[in-house]
Length: 132
Image 1 (cartoon, rainbow, N blue to C red):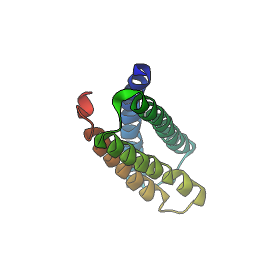
Image 2: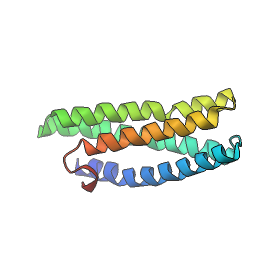
Image 3: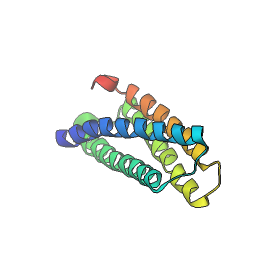
């Protein structure tokens, strides 16, 4: 069970780096008023996929450790709820890519910002927060 937590914890740093890079790229596109390129579609797909992987690992750990004796204290339920909201928001840019409207870059930028805020709030709600 500790291996699940270790992988889940290590992947958060990869996700944080991807989030910062994606946010920078979207800000660049916004500033230049450009549309998405193939690379941007790949970045958004990687971001959503990594969020899904994190959610799956977190959900497995939540139930396996909870039933294994750690229980289900409120902070774990808050973390789970906040992170599933973040996963939902992280998938919105992929839907906007398909629509092809000009506001897709702006909306994606805002969705990535909201996802980042939800991730921050979800991790801070844990004992130890980001230092864990």
